[in-house]
Length: 344
Image (tube, rainbow, N blue to C red; front, side):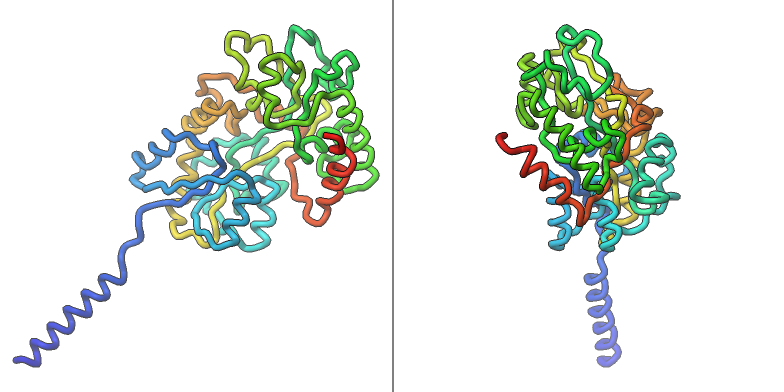
C-alpha cells in the first residue's frame, strides 16, 4: 500500500515538474521599427483586435537596427530599408514569409511590388511598408512656373535661396539621373560627372542640410528645398500651405522602400504574420499615411485618406529603388566627403 502511494506521489511530482517546464508561449509579438513610423493608436488597436500583446521598440537608422540584431537582440518583425534587405537575406537573418497568412498583401499597388523585386524577387522575405523619394518643394509666389527639372537648382536668380538634403545617396541619385545614369551607378566616370553636377548645385545653394531646412523653408528664408516633401511641408503654416508647391523632377531619381520582415530567430512567427497583415489593411495604411504625410503604397488606402498625398506610387514609375553598394560605397562617400562637403 505504501509502495503504491509512493508511486502515485512520485507521478504527481513528475507531472507537476513537466507542467511547470512547458508553459504555453506568450501571446505576443516583438516589433522593432523606426522612430515615429507607426501611430500609437494603430498599435493599440492591433492588440484590441487580435488580443496579441505588442512589444514595441524603435531605432534611428538601418545601421542601428543591424548592429542590435547582430548583437543578439531578438525581435519578430523589423522594418529595414530595401538597400539593407539583400544583406539580411544573404546573412541568414530572415525567414521566408507565408503569403497565405497575409491576404491584405493584395492591397499593395503593382508598381510598388514591381519596384520591390529589385532586392527581393517574389517578396519571399520582405513586404513593402512605405515608399518615398526626394523632390522639389518651392514657394509659388517666388517661382510661379518652374520647369519640373533639377535645373531649378542652378538658376542664377535663386542663388542662396536653395537648400539641398545632406545625404550622400539622396543627392547622388538625382545628380546621376539628371545625366541619364542609374541612381545606383558604380562606374567611376559616371560618378565623377555626377560630382561635377552636385558642385554646380552647391555653388548656387545656401547649404546642405537636414535639421534646419524645414524651418528655413517655412520662414521663406529659402525658396527651394530638395528633400522629402512630408519633412518640409509639415512645418509650413496651414494658413499659407497652398502657396507651397511640389514636384518630382522629370529626369527621375532614386526612391526608398521600407519593408516589414520576419527575423530568422522570431519566437512568434505566426503573430508576426498577423501583425503584418493588420498593418496592410487599407484603412490602417490610410491612417498611417494621414498621420505622417507619406505617399502610401496602396491606392485602395489612399482612397480612404482624409488628406491628399503629395504624390502617388504611380508617380514613381521612373525612379529606381536605392540598392546596397557593398564594397563600392567608397565610390560615393569619398567624393562626398573629400570634394563636395569641403567647406560646409
